[in-house]
Image (cartoon, rainbow, N blue to C red; front, side, top):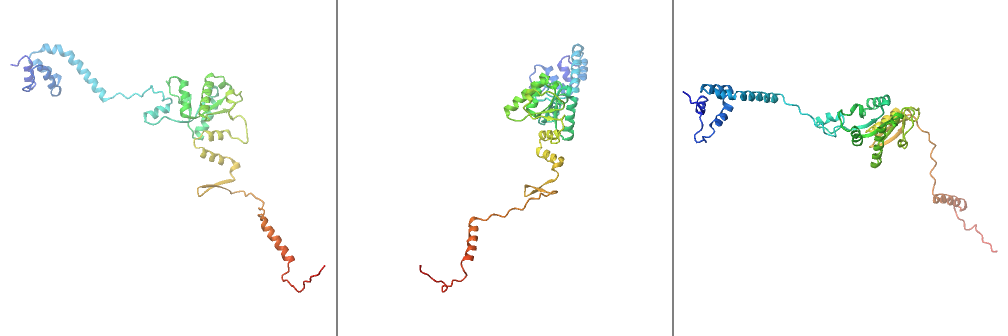
Length: 321
């Protein structure tokens, strides 16, 4: 016959409280033992065998809630919650920044930011096609690259242009000039460029328009006017490209007027030689002699003519006056 108290549980669970241990709270010691040695079902059956059904009924709901909580924790451990990136990082402005941040890379830098009005979308598409496809440059566009959900859109654009874009390419048009937001960005970047004493803005004109006052001081690239001495696409590429020496070499190859010259390297010095057409220069005049050489030659000639080779004293007669 089992005891109806903790001693009966110890007998059924094959647990003996160590001698010398504090005899207070024996049930707590039994629970500590059961954490790794038995299950809830076995513990419940032991209670029933000592006729403690009252304890089973009072603890049934607690046992059920503990089992549910245990299963939920096991499920979370098996399928951990993915790490959500910090959406409040104000430096993550573009879609490229998300990829760079998740891979532990520095934030993306761009060769230029392209600013345009929605009415000039075709001209903007032509610039993107030419610079990115043909010249392999990296542009940043508000409609394409700006991260959705960015707060304070124009503040983020100004930060992006100021810190991580080498140039600001503007498609100048009447619609662009009529936009107060576009002109605000231009005026801010212009003041920043003046403060840092660095060129920053490249105005591009594709259609006839009235130039705004703040842009009249810049050299414009006109894509709507033919000029045999100027290729606006080539000039734009050379200016924006971070590899200016390579871009300049490519422009020389593309210019037919420069194909008659070739550049060779001798002892790490650039030497220009004319390979196809030789320039006929007049022969160099003889080097003028010094005054002393001319005097010696002149005196020598006179001495040869005046002084005889042999001096005959007998033939000299002195006459008295």
